[in-house]
Image 1: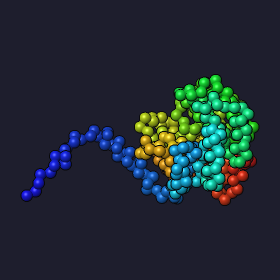
Image 2 (image 1 turned 45 degrees about the horizontal axis):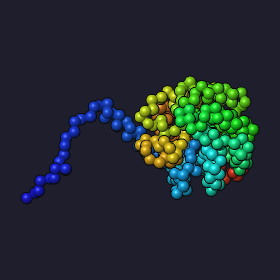
Image 3 (image 1 turned 135 degrees about the vertical axis):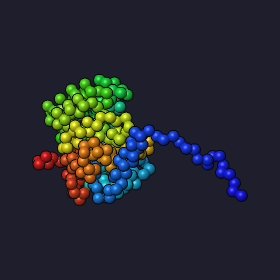
Image 4 (image 1 turned 60 degrees about the horizontal axis):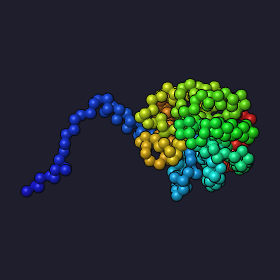
Amino acid sequence: MMRPRPARYVRVKRPPRPRAARIGCRRAKRRHSAWNRITMSEVAFADSHVHLADAAFTDDVDAVIERARAAGARALVCIGESPAAAVRAQAIAARYPGLVFHTCGVHPHDAVSWDDQRDANAVRDAVGVGAVAVGECGLDYHYDHSPRDVQRRTLDAQLSLAAELDRPIVLHTREAEDDTRTMLRDAASAGIRGVLHCFTGSVGLAEAGLEAGWHVSFSGIVTFRTWTDIELLRLVPDDRLLVESDAPYLAPVPKRGKRNESSWVPLTVQRIAEARGTTPESLAALTLHNTRKFFRLPDDPTVDRSTAGSVDASL
């Protein structure tokens, strides 16, 4: 005699979901599976902003980089948001010539610690061993971990270094649009290049950055349900568009909530490509080209590392 099925296994018929919900679910599945149909190793991409020197990667940074390489990464820009992080970033880059590149700067959260002589020399030293940009630096009026006037002075000091060293700025800006617009006008007058990294600002701020000749970079935030600025993804011209992970932060859907990695940048690429009406393959190739050109990276991994950051007269 067959025993009755335990109550916990009894099937309960759920009410049907609304049609809109079913359609949304199907679209999401198609969007996140689209890249899986591509042979990843054949689609080269760049991560223009990743914190490989962060403590979150201490135990497995090499495995993280190898996963990114296997996924198609051909350029990873490792951000040094403090002199100490920049030293670690440079050491990581030295192990992966032609793949990992490094920067040096002081994040606005730590602006209060800025020392004109010590930290300026740290940036100069980093550029001397191949740093491709000054930053991450900027203005953060959301958290205000450093007083705003101190943030502005520290950013001004790093803008001066960028001009002196002929390196672009990697800019963090949050809830500081008025001061950022003023800075962009001044930077344009001084011929300072830069990127508005992990951009979540207004259309007006993006336009101000583009008018100043700067690039705009998008992260996994654009895959979140809360992201509604589709037009912003279409606004940035092809030659000013960058893509990034900002790992270990801001993992894209469907990885949201996990430690982020560069190998998941294709999920962000897919979302931007969808909004711009192009293919992920084309957008990955475009943003890889833009990353190399913006940071003046060598195209060939066999090129000597000392050429990174040097001026290319053809640019």
